[in-house]
Every structure is written in structure tokens, then in C-alpha cells.
Amino acid sequence: VHGTASGKRYLQRYTQLPDMHVFLDISINGEPPERLVLELLTRYAPRTCDNFRALCTGERGVGMCGQPLHYKGIHFHRIIPGLMVQGGDIVRDNGKGGESIYGKFFDDESFAVSHDAPGVLSMGNNGPNTNNSQFFITTVAAKYLDDRHVAFGKVIEGLPFLKVLEEHGSDSGVPVSEVVIVDCGQL
Image 1: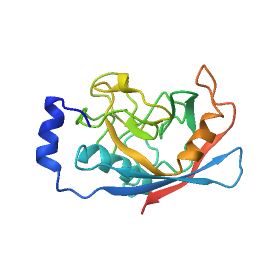
Image 2: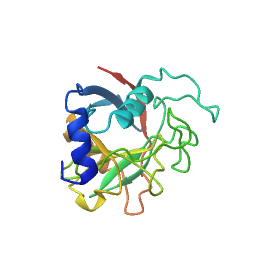
Image 3: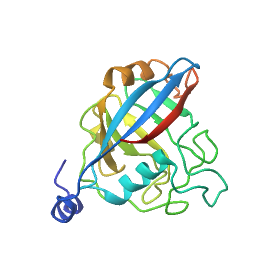
Image 4: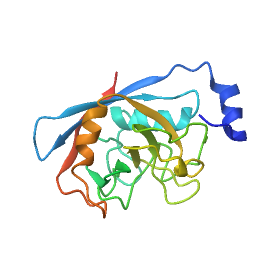
């Protein structure tokens, strides 16, 4: 966590909220899935965390784009070794779409959490205030992403598997294998 003004305001307002845990069961090329368990840091970004949690459970049904508001069955469409794995396009499943539980986009909430380690969970975006369902998980520290992407969680189980996922990427980001979320939910 770093000390931006917005980060300090969120720390003061949300420090009493309990963190939540979710899981992603991920299969590579149809093999039995491995699990990532993520801690959602609700005290820093409660709306962002609730969006991700609800997309893990699928509890919100179908979105405005006519697709399920659910990560189950969605591919990791971008994997860049030495940086991150990215998925969550619940509309097109190719990185060119997405939808949040709040509508097409929602605003950046807080930059209180830093991309300072492998395993940081963050929102993918197309610029300020364009968060939807797309997310990424860092495989290395990437502090240059601070104040540009809302980081809101971290991998607490499965970091070795995150390194395995990274091996299925390429310099262009196009995965060399099929990497899909076969199940997900809240713990």
C-alpha cells in the first residue's frame, strides 16, 4: 500500500471491512485444474472487490450485453512472461470486451494497493475509469502500474501455479495453450 491522497482516504474509511476470499480453478489444455485462492482487500477497494467476487460466484445472472456475469468458462487471453496473466473478458472472451456488475464500466476506486510483488490482483482497463470484468495477476513486482490500475487483492494460495501459467504465454501476450477458468466462487 502506498500513500496517495485517495489511498489515505480509503484507508481511513474502510479499514474495518473484512477481507474476502475467492478461488479460480484453472485448467491448461483440458488437464485437471489447479486452484488459485485470492484475498480481496475490501478495506481498500470495496466496490472493485464486490465486482470481482460477484463475477466469481455468478450470482448476478446475465448482464446488459446478454452474457453471464460469471468468470466460469472464460479464458486467460493474455499471458506475458515476466509481467502478468490476464483474463476476465466475459463478453467476447478475447480481451476486447467485458462488463462489470455495475454496467459496462465503473470508475477507478482507489490506488492504495501497490503492484509491488508477484500475485497482485488488479483491474485491466483502457485508461482512467474504464474498469469492467477484465483483471490481471502480476507475476513480478510492477510498481510502474501503480496509479494506473486499481490493485485490489493478492494470491494467497497457488503462487507456484501462477508461475506455471506464466510459462504458457508469449512475448506478444498470446497464450500458447488454452488456459481457462473451469470453476470459481467465494470461500
